[in-house]
Amino acid sequence: MTTTLPTAAAAPALPPAPSTARLVGRAVDFWRLQFKRTWRGTWASTVLTPLGFLAAMGLGLGSIVDNGSGASTLGGVSYLDYIAPGLLAASIMQQASFESSYPVLGAIKWAKQYHAQLATPLRVRDALAGHVLWVALRLSISALVFVVVMALFSTFHSWWAVLCLPAAVLTGLAFVPGIFAFAATLETDSGFALLFRFAIMPMFLFSGTFFPVSQLPDWLEPIAYLTPLWHGVDLCRDLALGTASLLPALGHVAYLLLWVAGGYALALRHFTRRLVT
Amino acid sequence: MLSKVDGVSEQPMIVAHGLVKRFGDFTAVDGIDVEVSRGEAFGFLGPNGAGKSSTMRMIGCVSPVTDGTLRVLGHDPAVDGARIRARLGVVPQEDTLDFELSVMENLIVYGRYFGMSHKQATERGRELLEFVQLEERATSQVEPLSGGMKRRLTIARSLINDPDMLLLDEPTTGLDPQARHVVWDRLFRLKQRGVTLVLTTHYMDEAEQLCDRLVVMDRGRIAAEGSPVALIRDWSTREVVELRFAADDTETSGEKIEALVEQPERPLRALVSRVEVLPDRVLLYSDDGDATVGELHRAGVEPQSVLVRRSSLEDVFLRLTGRSLVE
Image 1 (cartoon, rainbow over the protein chains, first blue to last red):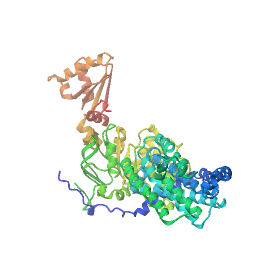
Image 2: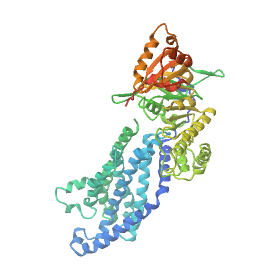
Image 3: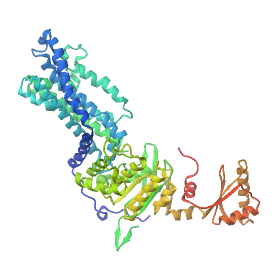
Image 4: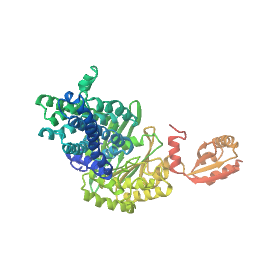
């Protein structure tokens, strides 16, 4: 064999590599276009979720709580005002987990959109970043709607409440890449049923959304403090009620960011392992 | 081995040396050498599991090379994968169309991945739908399209970036004969326009129709290489005589014929280069089928039916990769 390998210098010119931001933008654009096809069904749930929760839990259940011993346990605020920020954080978490589960496995296994993307200039990290960014956008829209509904119910006690929007999105994002990573390990969607039943649902119920975690049995209390949701709920609540102080708030933000970063590193690893074979 | 065009050496589109792909302990591609020039229609022919798709995925820069060297469009996929992919068109074995989007939207989304504007992608998409004869389906959903239409849409999509090279992994597997011929016709037009085509197939007729040159792969290795005509010349005879006998007779008749061909004084020995006894028939590979049949008759062999046909790529394929199923 006397064949010499061609050198890049003599090879046909390739187009310059686009910036990562552009490549990620192209992936986001795909999800946006796909959403345009299917968004009609989602509006109802985006608007009805906060309305339904606040009306039923806040006003309905709240009237009983406020007339009982609840008011003192909750620090003198109405039950509606107490649970509204908790419901905000918890429902954004719930949406985050849905958006990060089935669509991700679908893009790997069923519709294979990731595979289509990877045959183009997009790389695994672009496909991942694009999809995560898209989910972040979706969460932002839902959180915005929820915050507006909370304002209509006049549950806010302070102007700091506007920060509930980024705080809720950050709470959701704490779950997103981790669930992306989990989805990338699955062969069937039955793992998601376990995730929702044994992780998301218990968190929704016991991480301070509906009652202070101090009401939990002593052995369960520390576990609640470990969940990202509790940090999100506590942060949103302090902001909504105007009881936030700097250090605990920063602590919550840092803890949530840690989940985002850890989950993202894991997602990138699992995506690479699954998609680059 | 650079071909000279107007005194300027032209880079091959693909150069692979000792290319290896392993998945754990399993070696899918076991050290192959391949070179494909610009404008060539090149085929990887082989049974399932021969390593064709693994090779294609490495060439498509979506699967890392385990060992050996690979240059695609003159560049190293490990270094410039994304930039190489910008100039490739890929038709994967399984369609990756988005069922939630319309036919046209599938093209637009894909064009966007290559950095085209919405408008550019729409214009190009319209041309391509015309090319694959789907222009009336632009606004339809993808799901209800027939298998052949989906395949054509995937081909249209792969052309959105006007690629330097088109990679097709089993482009017509699972299609009915009409749909296959439409796909072949479109691919043949692309070839005439000078698009470099690289395809995998386990259909002999597909390889004969489309490929200027091909390699036969078996168990991760290249068993033979050449044009379809040269492969038939090198690995088979000009003609094949197919003899059928009464059901119980095939084996004994086969043994008898094998013995006849072994006899040095018989002209059969010179005529027949190989005898293959199959459960239902006996094949004699010969450059002169009619003379062979005449000699058999003279020797007292009386089959129920006789068929003299030209050798095909299928004979080469079965000779090289064997008749037994590897699964």
